[in-house]
Length: 547
Image 1: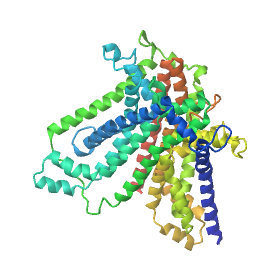
Image 2: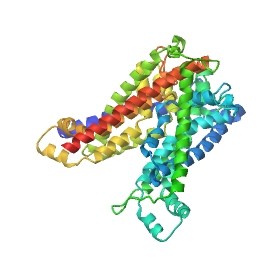
Image 3: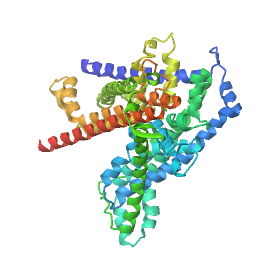
């Protein structure tokens, strides 16, 4: 093996070893625990039989399915209509509507619940107007999940509709086909794979979310809160492992469907495809403009309700403006929890971006070692099937084992960073891989012919040309780490409490104004990071055009 090949082989093995440590071994520990008793003896399916024999526990499974199904129907429908409005109509302010649809992504799911309570709770702004919908329980969890999953569905439909082939529509137009017929005969069949994927993604996200149910669930138990109680309340780790494996079921199904539909959808766009020309229709545009406006108004009202709570002395009894709610109590984490989140997110974004880029590079650009590269590519997409809470529980079983040489990581910032890197790995990987595939393979050939080291090609050519994808990955990791709660709820320590966890503690302590204030800080920093990213990308594109 030549020196250059040996170096590539070692780097590839190092990347695979890292994935085995942060994903494969923890998952093995989780599944092993589900089939053991408290003494570590193998008991087969006994834990699963005990779970389903307990009506209170098994009810959580059916509650979760009910919430997820209703969430999926509404999120997919609203997401499709919103994407349709931005791609198939001539409404104004499309860019504004597109960015506003992403607001829920910039705040934790627990904040969606806090905002809904501020609107529809017993002392909520809308409740005081005489409109009471009994927000705690099924309705509240479902509304929170719809807010959470709507942007995901919208983005999937937006991309598909934006790049649809316009030739079929032109043919239908020339034949006098009515708009509704075109919708059912052309549009829906054209996006069927996206429709299936969006449904599974929304169902999985709702099925595995922890943030909203823990705040607004009331007595309506779901799997995510059940898992939390089993681990932190009852210390029943074996039953917690059972619940953790149950949370994997829809995620694995979604992963399989995603892979199958992506393969089936390959080549859907051809070189002869043309961009769809949207015809004029005043009635259609008025309807969809009103629809988009209502969605955005609801999101802004949600943020506005948080702002009212955050900037008033004692809502709703004393509405005197104040900044006192931003003086957070040390009992619930203090202002330090916010800076801990920023610190954790910066570390995650920096280390995660570097790890993803190198991992994608060796998987795509390494010469030979086909078998190892296939394993690397398989590992890269598996995190799509791993809910955050499952990662957290598996890390407890693996890293908290005193006999594990990696035990030193448990209880540190490092394990939070690892959990975040794994939880959000697949999307950045696909982003980086897409950028690397656009680079000509001749770069490597020229470098080898000139006997130039690959590391020099990597630093002087590959990285600069992939800078937009790198910045997008950094931004994605930062924002995702700022809002996550599921992946770290089992792993944080009182010495390093982050903002999303602090919000749940503030709500539990009844200091809702401070929870709203912390939520606004998270939203602010994420919006600022997004703006910096957009400005930087604009400057990079402008400079490249001038070059």
